[in-house]
Length: 66
Image (cartoon, rainbow, N blue to C red):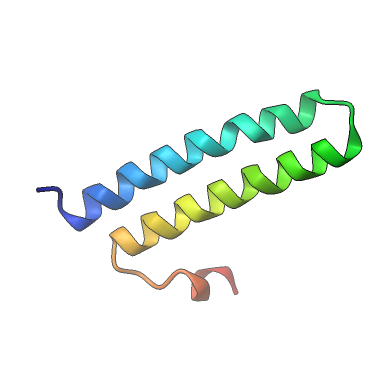
């Protein structure tokens, strides 16, 4: 059984790794609409990873943003 902190760290690492792929695609592609969509998808994945990291340490996520 995986504890909450380890699970949060693992999910954070997975989401950041998944977010890097669309971000690199956003900088390499020339089509403007595909660039924007890739950038949004990559940023969403990374922010979602930070959400899992914060919940793994039982911290509130939204107050950290504001």
